[in-house]
Image (cartoon, rainbow, N blue to C red; front, side):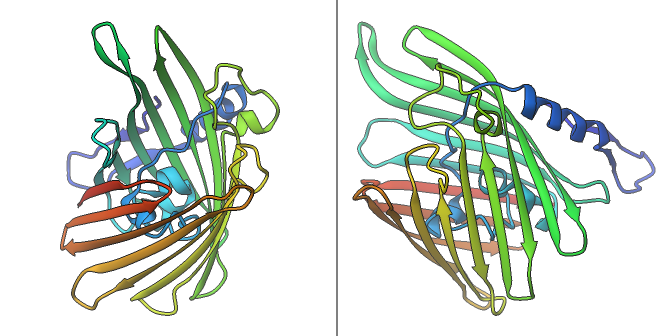
Length: 302
């Protein structure tokens, strides 16, 4: 994991963050990194909108869906998220992120993601595959109406009796075409995209390109559509549709739909969230072929 170097002024002046070297490290590690990382299944608002989030990304979920969206943060924040199935298997996915808004040097995020999955009976009880992903994300502006972003990951995966560690990276962009329309794109596992996939990578991982369009005619309504795995690197192409309606002075209501392109697969989601000044609570439920997944999130802004 890579930490941003920060200088904190004792006299109370704004923090200054030196991100120049971090941008260089990001570029190097994306090129030198190895293997692939599966998409993290977190980001409660994003899941509530059916994963149609590449061109939205105005909160901590940007780390997993489009790191360029970190430039849209209005405050610094700490976020926690947890997703778990309803089958009683004790599998889960969770994350905690520290988000730093842009202070003239770019916006950044430090994230720890943990996955426990694939339960199997062992001689001493139930065994799980476990993944720990430590990442640093950085976003900076491109001109007046666009942003670029990237994330470097160090991932350790424990499966059965062996553990694999590797580096990889993601690259993304977000462009505001008007006051209503935004477009975004993200390429996950860049190293794999340029032809260096490790045979140790888990099935279903690999490079994936997703792109999306969002429409926000006012502060209350957001409608979005995404295409996932457009180059079919993960053999999981799908279309995602989502929407959000923010009740004036009240909660936000969300819904989404995902449909496979090459396979007969379909899932839907419902979600809600509420802002309480510095605090935000969110919940999403995924049905259909997800077979029931609960996702909950908490954000503290400062």
